[in-house]
Length: 281
Image (cartoon, rainbow, N blue to C red):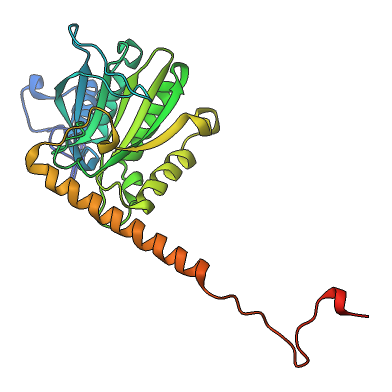
């Protein structure tokens, strides 16, 4: 009887090929085992899609013996900041964290932040001291969805792309209030108008219409303008320098406007002199 041809297995992973020369039938993988091996090899070959930056998650919890500070916008409060253990290095990491974070269980006046590694969600942090943030007030019913969209704009670098050169996105945050969520976007340089305008436009353009906050439900504020802000001594000089530059720029603009107002107005006339409608016959 003629011998059956051997199974051609070149370029097939050894874990999937079945050796016809192995005399021990226990060493021959079954079709189900081969499929499992193929699945494992496929998953090993997959590479997580990395984020451009590493991101840390922080949680602010209101201490029981502390009272929230009074302010005009209700945004300031004394809190305890805790960095959660998981660092986000890939898109898969983000969805794992986001899908397992019950935003609806965060208590009143508590907050969660997603910040680039090296930044902390503290106004007086050395990388935040010259910065500011946009804050969007949205109903709790849509807060989780808005929060997910804003986080994706951050880790996907869409927010960074709209900033003026030399500026940088620090992170984003969600704070719980009585009947709403305050969602904030922080950046480093509050004196860069292109950045301030760009962040707002980016958020509004990328939110679906049903999630977009009303015009009177968002505002921008410099960190140094908050009632509870107090810069450490070693950074106060930096803040003073920024304020001096802003004051000088404002004075220069005011002087230019005043000079334009005081300039003599030249009225064009014809060869026979000027005339008005009342002078015509």
